[in-house]
Structure formats: structure tokens, C-alpha cells
Image (cartoon, rainbow, N blue to C red; front, side, top):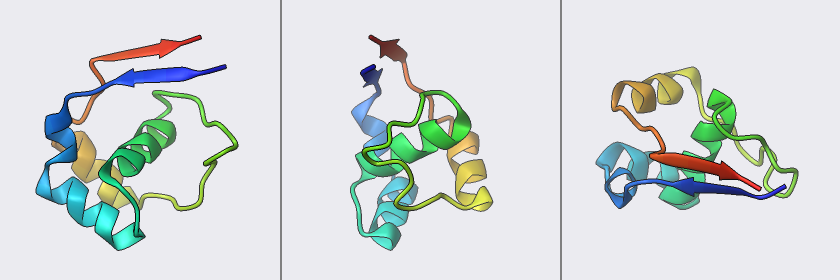
Length: 75
């Protein structure tokens, strides 16, 4: 099963997202993928499963910033 996420590039450019990515040594795209997995928006794939987990504060921050995919397509 493949998941395709349509997301505005603006979210990857947010300072908060870039800061969290820097903290985990990863990309903003991966941080947002983890946010969507931990939020239950997309299913987890074991390939990246959970090499890190966002904290409750980080999850709340992204939620408050309105980070949402414009479309999720699961094949």
C-alpha cells in the first residue's frame, strides 16, 4: 500500500518545522510525515516506522499552526 500526500510547500518552509527537523537531524518533509503518522492521518509504513517520535508539544504546535494535507491518496 502506497500513500501519496499532497501538501503545500509552505509548511516545509515554516521556521518551526525546520527547527524540529534540525533537532532530529532530518528533513522538514520527514518531520511532517511523522506528524501525519502520529496524528493517524496516514498509516505507518515499516520502512521509516518510527526512527523518532515527535513530542506532545511538537504535535500540538503543528496542529495549532494548521498543518494539514490538502489531499491523502492511498493506493
